[in-house]
Length: 178
Image (cartoon, rainbow, N blue to C red; front, side, top):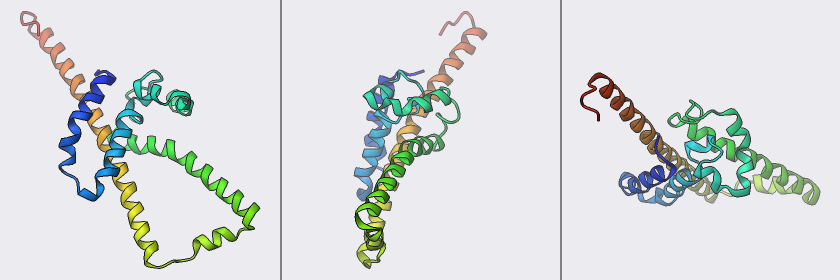
C-alpha cells in the first residue's frame, strides 16, 4: 500500500494532466476540491493516524465517529465516487444544519421571522445567474474531490495488484525471484 507521501506526490504530478480536460470556468473550484481531497479528505480518513487525519489538528475529533464505524479500505471509504460523496456529506451536512439552525434562531429572535420572507422574495435574473454560478461552483468542487479520490484509489489498487502479481510469480517460478 502506498504511503501518504506517495499518494500526495502522485496526485500533485497528475493534476496538470487532469486540468487539460477541464473548461476554464471550472478550474479554480476544481483545483480547490482536488487539493482538499488530496490533503484533507482522502480515502484514508478512516485511519486515525493518516496524514490527512493529522492535518485536521484539534478538529480531527470530527472524524472520530467516521473512523470508528468505517474500516480501512472498506466499500464506504474506498469506493469510486460513493466514498467521496459520503465524506463530503459527513463533513458538510452537520455544518449546513448548524448554520440553518443559527439562521433560524437569529431570524426569530431579532427579525420575528421577517428576514426569511425578505430572502425568499424573487429578485429576477440576478437570482438565476447567482444560482447557476453557485451550482457550477459546487459541481466543479465536488468533481475535484472525486477525481482526487479516484487517483488515490487507482494508486492503491495498482500497487496491491502488482504486489499480488509479484507474489504469484515468485511462488510459481521460485528460480526467478522478482
